[in-house]
Image (cartoon, rainbow over all chains, first blue to last red; front, top):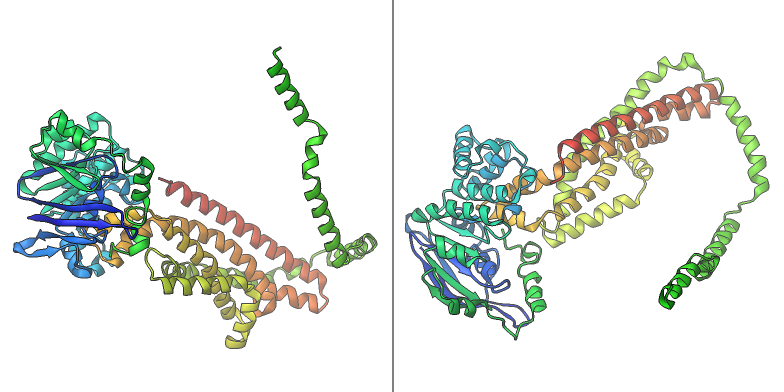
Length: 275
Length: 274
């Protein structure tokens, strides 16, 4: 379904951000990636959808009718075709704030409708109804006409999930979907994600080992860009300590610099890789 | 009182004494010297100011009273002035979306952005009157030249604002739309335009007001309208008629300002900031 093969990302100055990340995801799996900030969780996901270029390795995604896409090398239309089959659940604050909730959900189908129609005519009534159904699934149907910027963090996160559901992808990538939420909202989001994974696998990055233990089927532990754990979701105290232990070679400031550098800070401006 | 408190009190007291201006003294002297030098170069002198004021005031007397029965013949020129601005503003606003996109580094290639930004900066450096004089040579005297001049002027202002607004869009929002497999055109339509259109609308209202003002001025140079009436009345020494034209253009500018303020506040309150 999704296989990540020795994915490596190096900065021009030689700093290794991802070190030969390798794992595969099969149908029915809900994979949670755990790791301290700056370990490379988000970066791994960005490489998987071709938002960031990689230094070595590849990500192969099996799309509709068994077609395979190497998302790390393809560009243009081919990349767009791959992306429409991958539902990215990003942090809710990345929604288009000035559009309504329903419009944000409908953006999920942009890859499937003709550009000319999306420009001149917009969406059909049937698409709107389906989008409303997706919103209903996350419990926000009554919010459809609201301006997205006026929603709370938890509500925006649900809209982001509704958008991914509406996209009807073959697998989901969730980048810290519960990072900025309170425990109650976090549980609610995890309960929404869990049943999705039965039909289409989810890879998500998390900061809460208790949540991944309860809801995920498998956990990857990432530390300094290297996978240090790959196994069942209930980790022992020692295993957790290994993932989160202090690394003295990299000061916290340096980690932050690496995060905000050309790789994550402004990828659009530096590489134009989203196209 | 402990000694520390006493000392801090003394420090604070000194801060409020006249002495605290001393450190600015050198800079102020320099500034004053510059002003004096500039005044001397510009031949400013009090005697000319006072005698000149008197002459100017007696000139104002020539304009009074305004020739009220000339008012009906001002209505059509006033319309022309408004129409020049009303045609130029929306066309300029539409064009400025294209120029704004071409001037943004998150959608346009670097060479295009540089070229567009340079063109806009060049345009902003040239007064509209100069543009109009060039256009008059091309299209002849008349409102059309005025419209084209104001369209170009509007693009110079609005295009830059749109370009800056697009560059300020959160790249993560753009990426999240791109992740659905959306094309470049779809990203513009669904991630960029919704975020910049409300402010473009508000700025266009403001630009309409500026364009009315400019349209009066350009009229005098050959675009027609109320400005043209004003300048011909002046050159034919019909000062009372000129006063009527001046009053009408004053009313136009005031009305445009009120209308633009009203519409702008409506637009801004509807597209509330997230």
